[in-house]
Length: 213
Image (cartoon, rainbow, N blue to C red; front, side):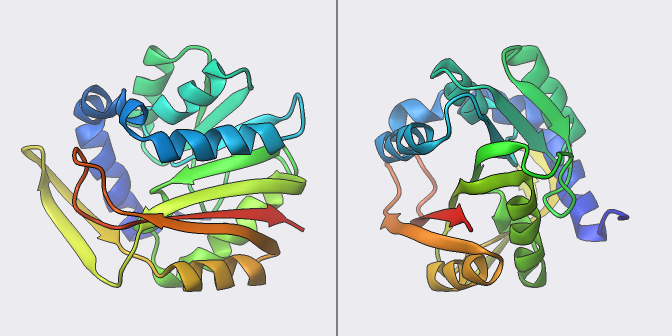
């Protein structure tokens, strides 16, 4: 599959900010107790010995947190530079470059998967296809944990931390995400929301936990 034009813009934008992104956000989970609790719950429910995928992993700090808690972890990101930064910073994590619409993984390779703020860069019509692709790479009964910004707006960035970029951040409706997951072959087990922490951008955050049928 050829890369979509907007995916190329997202990739180049994240290539541009990769080092600064890693420096600014490498310790962000320390200030996110709900995220840590949800990740811990995911690990507890993952088949022992199974690999966990971090999809849209960026520089790999979430994947590294998972690896530090005793699981084999594979980080996948669209940005080549993010993958390079991750490999340098977190040698215990395996990193692969790839698109959510065509994941570089075998059928049923992963016991569970995390995708924090990754689907916000997809076009609305791509979400179902992405969820079907995630289902493909999960084992039967494997879990998927998603997070995203809640709403119906699109925030476009021309600059990010002083760097020139071209990237859209799409806010999403939790009910629609749950419906799309169900039609893609998942059972939604949990939906929750929270307001932003003091150090975060002022948006409402959504989380969905779904199990592959």
